[in-house]
Image (cartoon, rainbow, N blue to C red; front, side, top):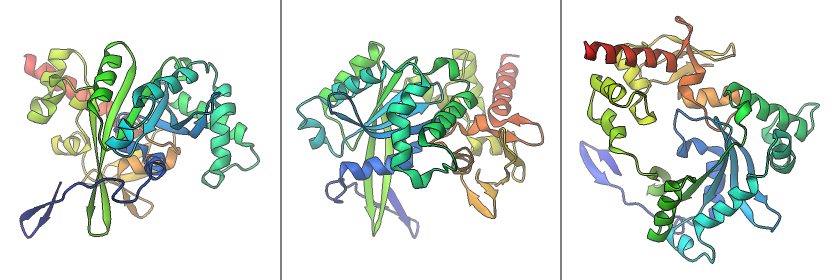
Length: 328
């Protein structure tokens, strides 16, 4: 990471969480409030639990539900030394936790065991009104699943996300093997940097390894449609972001964006942010506030008011048209 000053680049060296006197619980709290650090704009996620204890007394760090209805286990370790010194391997601890969640078949069950206690613990973050924590949990989780068309797929499978500032080779090897055998497990490297009194995080997904086709978007401009023609579908990495959509004229600064299913609207700015309620926000932050989710599929839930289409629909139309033109 570099700091640019007077047209010169000054390298900022990474530090360790231990040198910052940050505990695993500190990282856990940061991710609880900002799980979009390890998601992207194509994924919705709702945090439903923290430090959930299973029947054997072991505790999982964070529990979430994603836009496909999967229960997601997020396990965190500070530094590589913390990963290596564990009696039980990092990845297999997470697998064991995930296996315990596989027995949950109904929303009601997850709310009773996990989400309602979470709401009780962070009561000041929720508007209970006349509802009990259980009633609010059922309502919020069902709304999340309904909005993401995932009601019929609730907990059909489980996902695991491992987060650490570094991983040992044995962990990475085991995770790669588990992925090749159908276990949905990801590794994210969370690297801290310190500049003056400010701390910055850089997140990097290191497993599963991104295939070379996913990098086409980074090497091409308007020829992105080549990816569509070769693979027949759009991958997350091949989809243009709002900056490219503005550059290509799919949308323009000043357009009104509406939150899907709501009356909230904001004005699209030239940098891709939204101006709403007399404040500039990223589209992700704006939509998260409206829906009350931990992370949100930005392009699915942002509607272009003039056309009545979501940003996802607009860019898909554009990509398909580009592909057709290149085939002619």
